[in-house]
Image (cartoon, rainbow, N blue to C red):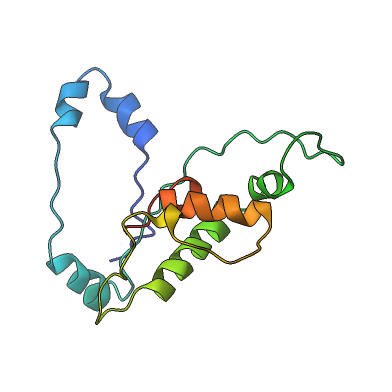
Length: 143
């Protein structure tokens, strides 16, 4: 049994059966993950089960300019960072903040009113506000 020999192309499938398929038939199709699938992949096929990652359509980014007028520099640089690097930074911060034994940390009721460091750059203040409001890259943080 080899998975390399098994190929499925959605485009060919729809072209062959386009006169029989209706959107309603595809909308009600549901699949449940069976626990025996892991056993089949590991013991019979001798490989790990596949993992699928959804690739979102890339955002439009204007070409980089040498001198950017009237734009905060940190936001300008942030938009050209790789999304995986940004998500990795957020996950590392999340793992650093949580403990599996203690649960989520205590968050103040009004986090923006809590005193911060005496002096920080303006761009860092804005990042802290975004973090506390759960905006931008921090919107998926649970606490």
